Amino acid sequence: MKILHAAWRYDPRDIDQASGVDFQVYQILLKNGCDVKIIDPLFSAPFLLERAVRMALRVVKKKYIKYDWSLAWKASQKLNISAKVENADVVFTLFPPSLVFYSEKTPVVYGVDTTFRGRQKEIGDLDAWAFNISVIQERMSLKKCSRIITYSDWSKEDLVNFYGVPENKIDVIVMPSSLPDSVIPSHIDIKKEKKLVLPLRLLLVGRDFIGKGVGIAMETVALLNLYGIPAELVVCGTNGLPSPYTRFVGPYKKGDAKELVEYAAWYRWAHLLLHPSLFEGAGIVPSEAAAFGVPTITNAVSALPTTVKDGVSGIVLPKKSPAEAYFYAIKSLVENPERYYALCASSRKRYEQELNWDAAGQKFLDVFARAASQESVPTG
Image (cartoon, rainbow, N blue to C red):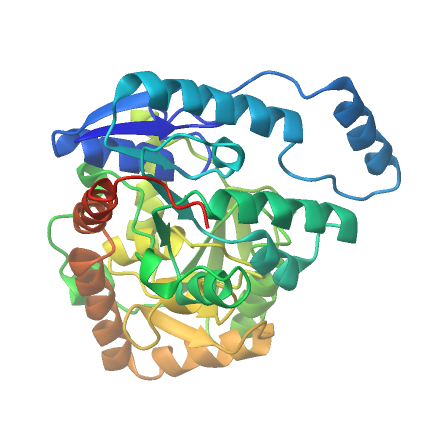
């Protein structure tokens, strides 16, 4: 199968660019013998008028649209030219700009974690004008798609109910771990490697201090110590002021062999992953944790109830739960070690069954095959 991979701004040959999903999809396609033609990332500047508007909005602390019209036009034309000459079976992209003005007949598979409407409902970081323009671009892109891959039931619901995408065009594939097999243990002796001894070892992985709920995690570890459960928290990926129970490390580059091993070592170290995120379009780190038999304690915001299966790969608390809720969830596991060990085992089992790229990759390939059987892009 020949696939055009429209990369937009990130190079899918580099695991450290963006979330790494581009890289993982590219690798799984190569592994399965696909002929992949990358449409190189677009680095040109937007028009002067768009740059001026963007700068003006910064002054009043409002966000401009994410994708400039001029760059969407350029990206779409690059894709149109490639689709015209390459005779590919499928176009694949994770970014809508290449599809806004797409006009060729090669079927399109589009991977999306969150729609603009979904993001706006959760965090509301666009003003009304920018949001409306973004939705117009998104609607234009979605009409060009033969198949849409998304990573959560939450996102699928939004695509169907707000954007009017037919449900039978959407495939939900849970976001797998982005770690290579080289750092993932082939077997885990749960009661030995995850022995529930104190101090309890808690891990949080994320680059956004506020968005990933670092403050909530720090409050949680403080409560545990206050009420007689010795615990320590390591925050990997962002900086902050250390406390008696919290230290900050990283970030680490997965493309660097030494740093990759150091990064994976934190999952080996941890008893639990704390993930009190305020918004999550997909959620990769809970799947990474599951690879090491580490359950995730999180909340039912956006994609997380799909990424973390409650009672299987972790505990999913009510949406935007406070630190006290995380404290009681952890306390219940400490007081019931057998429940904790069972959760560790089922987390690892879920990784082996669906939270790895071999399993997810086969689902991607099946979607590409179904898209390739269609003669042309929808225009409806």
